Length: 308
Image (tube, rainbow, N blue to C red; front, side):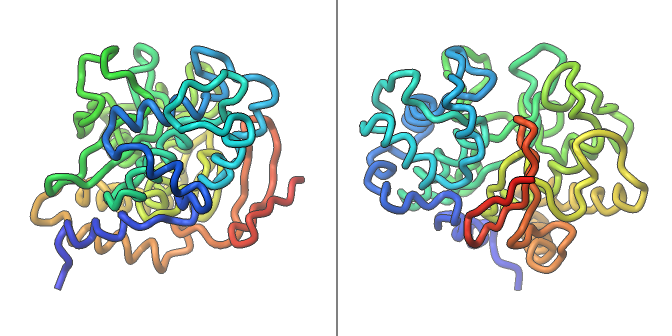
C-alpha cells in the first residue's frame, strides 16, 4: 500500500548529515521556524559569494565549499559568537550561496520538527529575461508542501516569497519543470544557467539539476558544483538515451509535486530510484568543480576532499 503524502513527508523532519547542527543545536533552535525569522537568520549569517549587496571579502571566498551546517556555524561563531539573527559585521559573515541560505533554513525547520527540504531550480526574479540557477526551501505545513525563498525580503516582491507560486512559468521553476518545457519545445533553455553570458547553462546544465534536485529531495544536499552519476555536464547537449532517462525523472518529479491522488505513488517511485539507481544516487565519493577553478574528489563519509 502506498504511503500518504503526509507519511512520506515525515522523514524530512529529521536532520540529514548536511543539515544537522551538531554542537550548534541551541543556536539553530533559537530561531523561530517561520519564513520571516528564517530570512533574518540566514541572511545575517551568510553572504553570497558573488551576488550580495555587500560584496564578500577575499577571506570569505573559500567558505563556499563548506558542505555541512556544522562547518558553516563553526566558522560563523569563530568570527562572531552571536545569535544567528543578530546584526553581524560584514567580515564576520560566512561566504556561501543560495544552497547554504536554504540548507541553514532547513536546519532550523528540522530542528523544530517541521518536515523541510531544499529544491533546485531556476528563478526569474533576479535579472529580467533570465533564470538563474537557484535553491529554495519547501516545508510541509497544513497538509501540503509550501515553497519559500529565504533570501528574499518580502517587501521587495509582488509575489508571496513565503509561499511561492508553483508550476511551469512561476517565478521559481523546478529543474524538472524547466526540462520538460524544453523537451516539449516551449523553451530552448538558452536563458537558464549561472548568469547571462556565462558558459554554464542550457540543456546539459538543467539536466544535471534534475538529478541534483532528486538528491536534495532525499536529504543529500550537495553543493551546486558537485557532480555524480548520469549528469551530462554543465554545458553542451544531452545524448538521446540520457535525455529519455531524464524525461522519466522529470515527469516523476512533477507528478510527485502535484499533490493530487497520484503524487504519493510518484514520490514512492522516485524514492526507489534514489535508493537503487547509481545514475541518480550520489555515492560516498563524488566529484566537485568549484567556481574558483578547483577540482577535487570528495569523500562524504570522512568529510575530506582530495584536490587535484
